[in-house]
Length: 168
Image 1 (cartoon, rainbow, N blue to C red):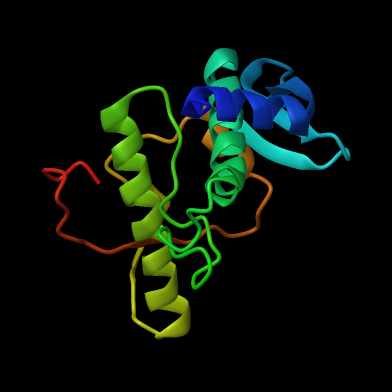
Image 2 (tube, rainbow, N blue to C red; image 1 turned 30 degrees about the vertical axis):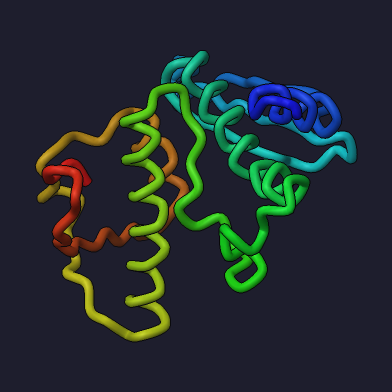
């Protein structure tokens, strides 16, 4: 029986055509970040990552690709029903990463994010609006760059109890 790493490598090798990376520049031409993309054999985007660090943007793109292809690994093992993909065909809560604890945290955050969206959109639950100027942290130049493409940006805040000691 092939190891999980072997299965991941096999699936990546049979599905990935190329990896593209490009710099993201601000209005003065200074590089403020990187955009990495993993392209499948049909020319479609499998995974993408954006970060101020070129290597981290690539790690994000590869991790997202593994998340997307992870369902194929589960399908090939006949484990579909154990993961409820036959009842809930989604990637909510799936996360791939390079370190156990941050990956578990991202998995929880992925599922929580989708649940919050469902509460807000489907169940019409109210979220508290937050003005960008009231944030307790500063936006990075990369975040400001992407926000600049929109006329208005709305941020919402909701507190939740988590099993991760307040890290989410």
